[in-house]
Length: 337
Image (tube, rainbow, N blue to C red):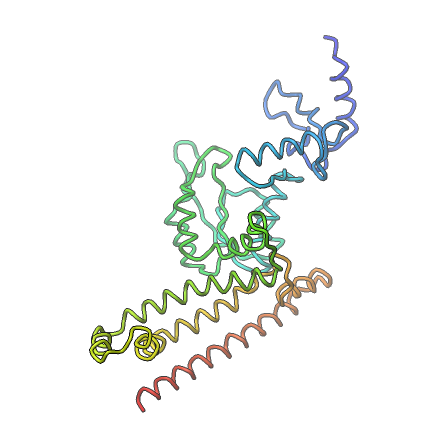
């Protein structure tokens, strides 16, 4: 059979070129009999646009994809799922932190864990006995893993899997959100999302300050709500019987007692806030952890900088704990006096 001019040109190009960023099959192994055309699947040729700087058919395709999903912008990955997973995990999990990951994830997840020296809490899905493949990741297993590793920065799972198995993503997402996992999402929303819909632009410091303030305020308000609820109803009735106005009653009678009862939880929240500030490095603000990563990347020595950072945080947290206990003793002493 006579080959067409196009087929001849594609075969000539495919013999002399190696795809640097796409496609994943590298034009070597046909996925199924009769699909030898995969050998001609080239991207780095004239007329096919360039993923690194799209301005033609790829730019149009990305605009259409963004419209399809209701997104502001869309960028196709330059290195397939590998680079997407590496970038996503690196953004969510700072160097040396903890993640929860399913055992049946893409091998790039393992690469990201190794490169970032992350501690992984593994989720092993049950095996389907009929087909001998991994089944769904169970929400209860995710909840147990997050309870065992409350400092986990993200949960990584594949759904659908390469075999087409789906997990209950909605329930798993609710479990993650209920445990405070999405603080980084709030940081990204403030820094990247708000400027897209409002005529305002925050610096990394401003965005971090606003997010941490609002996030901590939510937890502190719940603690205070519990403390206020623990005040005996007789305190309210006595104040109203004496004709004390509600604002004065709250300021002078109720809130001082409520704050005393929730003081330990307020100190714990402040300590958590201190440790969570490392997330700000994900939007470009240099903190002590980021400096340690820079030193490690230049010197290839990880122990010294991260040991020094660990000691620094330990001293800060220990100092805050001692200060909190001293404050509790002072408050208790004033009550007895």
